[in-house]
Image (cartoon, rainbow, N blue to C red; front, top):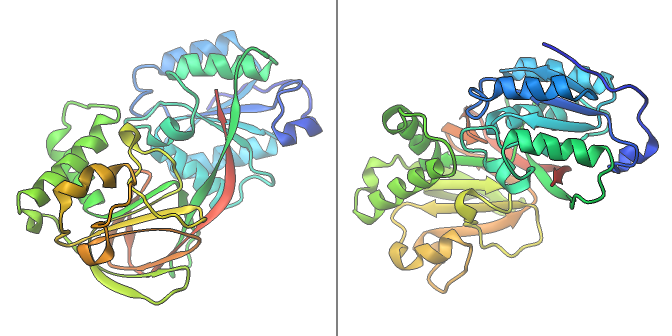
Length: 338
């Protein structure tokens, strides 16, 4: 692990995310992420040319936890995450699940993963190296750079095992982990990257349903409680929860209108009128036939309880549900958009 530390102390203005005088910036890099395997040397060259960053590399959750504890001890208040969705998920778990920082830092996400769905919604635009150049310019007071601070709640997943909560921004169960594993093991042997990957997973899933082959997709018996309302029991093909406002290719298959941070959508077994409803579903448009009776359910919530057995994903990382899950928002986190 190599480090470079900025001289000088943080100021009170840094706590409200002003770049007046510069923030104390730390860069966390996962050299094994999909976008960094071929560009890692470029990041190191950038750091050799530009001092003023705390820098560390980490490849797994425990290393990431240790790095962020060190960053917190160094008063880092601008955290640049140069890795994929899984790296971001581990970092968010350390920050919002384990309270690695006394005050959570402003976060800048780079598009350095295989899919980079989180960075596409709330990250810095451009490839990692140009994005780092922009962050450096902004942090040294370049007033010509337009920027905004986006607020996104973090999904916190608790179970009844007593382990620390998991944190992330996209939760999927049912056909989603099944499809991702199938794609990674049988289809994506050439190492494709980008938004085409989840698009192909969803396309395959929908084609199987439309072709009457949904029995090849494992359904999930599940019990659901939304905002402590009565429990609903059903057979789910697909369950999604997110705090993102944009998924891959700009889709947003959530049409709940409640003023709550968790976007929840479930597709039940044998949904009716799928082909006619599909264009509206993918972009969150409510239609008269998009009803629970027809197999569609979407709701914005503050707390969701799920009881099922099987795998789920959180930002592309696989986990096992062995006890009921309680899902609620944490944050809101603040993301730098340049």
